Image 1: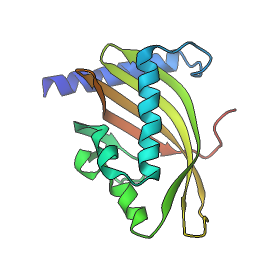
Image 2: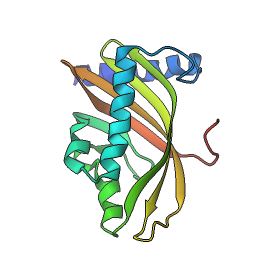
Image 3: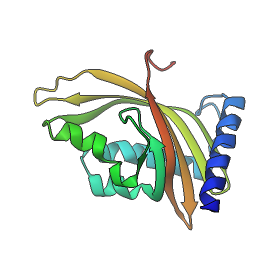
Length: 162
């Protein structure tokens, strides 16, 4: 429990650090850890597109706590796929339109990634409303593996900056 409190505290401090260095990713050289996190974030959305729930679930730490924009309350890992199954049960498929990194910060075994994702839940005719969401994920490295320990998202009313 003490470690979890430390992780959450560090998460808050990391977000403060991100706001201090608001340069967009891509305008700076990335470290191997930063590249690994972006690769995992892109895999996250590929798993959603492919409806690969086992691979998607493997990205999450067993002690995950976060607040997705589609949830009325914070969720733990056991409910992390609910937002996907609620749409696929209506025969909709997920399609990413754009993945746009905003900022990343890696400090030791904790990484915070902030980005925009634009997507559609499409029917069999490829029709569906476009959405853009801001995402923040905090990743925890255990051994050589990274897992999402916390996160939050919110709908974006404006398109991401160019």
